[in-house]
Image (tube, rainbow, N blue to C red; front, side, top):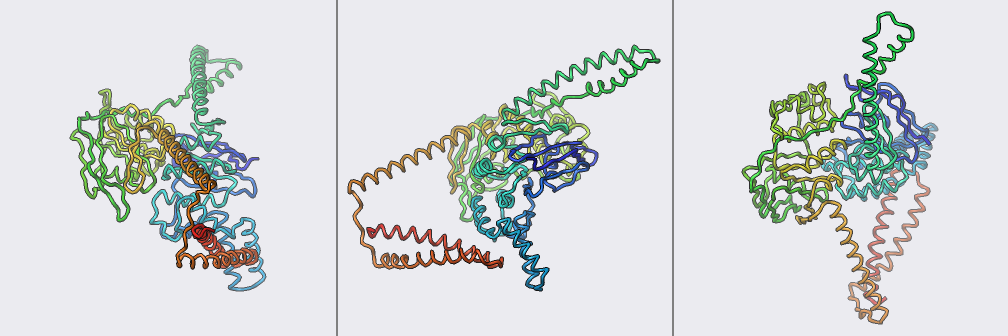
Length: 631
């Protein structure tokens, strides 16, 4: 069943065509990843398919009555609104239904007439169809899964990761038929990515996404579409299958190109030898020559980002951190941290958002001061810091001016020198793009330009804070190859598990409350170790439970403890309170089936939630006291 179809889609920005006459379809049950280089138009294509942008040519059609949700790479939430207000303001069908009902209710209160009553009935029917009456409870449950438990705080107080989680809730609450996601893992920590990975891989939603996270792609998607030179190539399989079949396709295209060039050479020789007066047959051959020339002139884009810049010599002393402390009010990030870096270190840093990962990098880079302790940097160390926030470019500045502001000539690792223009070419920026203003670049192109400006300073200590955000998979593969050969010291914070596995050989695990564990191994080794630890904890817990059971069966029960007057009184009160709460819960659930006033529904739903929480707490306390009493 076809859910969405884009036919003959074309889009350009200025003189730059992103794609022309592109056709793409999404069927029910597909889980598709769209792969392409930065600047190829991936995000634009997703927005066109989601109805957020209009193509220059072509049309998008969707199956009637299907729900489509779109998560932007950089979700826009009103900073002055609270979380709940921002969510209700999003263009989601379920929130639209709530707003329509509230507006109809206000209109009916203002003037009770037949038209307003019909509007209210239609809005009420839509609420029924969307199952939106308990939206508050559903929203709180989903936000809790994303570790957001306060709905009344302002969006302006949230971190980038928290904003992404709120936006994710706004598209998941509706349980759409088709979910379109643009870089869903950006700004999420690894634990949250793994939760989302599990959620999406077990859902029934049809998915279309752009992601650079290859483990996430492998776990969630079963098909890859590659957008290259305005053409869609389809691969039904995982990431490894895609790489294999892509290589086969490019080899076949290379052979076809060689054949076309040979044919072009023969036809060109024939054209030169022909007299001016030609037969009809020879004229048709001349006409066909244009097609041959076109095919022969195709150039397979086998260029890659080249990162072989020269590195400054590194001395014996690199970096020492001695008794470093850092707190923010009551939040402890670093607690007497000690570490001495050695030559060739490839360190990965992992932990939940807010644990202090970026703070440590900022302290090393001298951008933040520790509360106490020392940070000693070696005299020969040239530090290159690729920060999560990125470089602040002047939007009206041209790319080549950005590079020339740093250096007109750049020394390379092999002793040669490159001009600013040549270096841009090596980073896959063609000549015609060099004078493009920074404001015209895609997010990934800006990140690639930022990486270039850091590497041409020849660092020997490279700090990378979330370097994979917005970079395409092709550039990531090249960056990983470069880092694996980089002779200096590397410190990386990244949520990209594939990237961490390829680059880092040991980890700092930020466990919270200032505790940092040094783990010898890559990220997969760490997750396997964690799984083994959890398995051992479960085994010990089961052994303890079995031992207690055997002891009870053998008559070795604990002696009964006489309750204090206070505990006895509390138990008597619980015997009265629990039945009363259960009765109130049944009455309110029956009331929910009859009331139509939205405010009353929200109030009743909230009270039911309070009662459920109270019953859980009082029930546990009753069991505890009853056991002490020997009941």
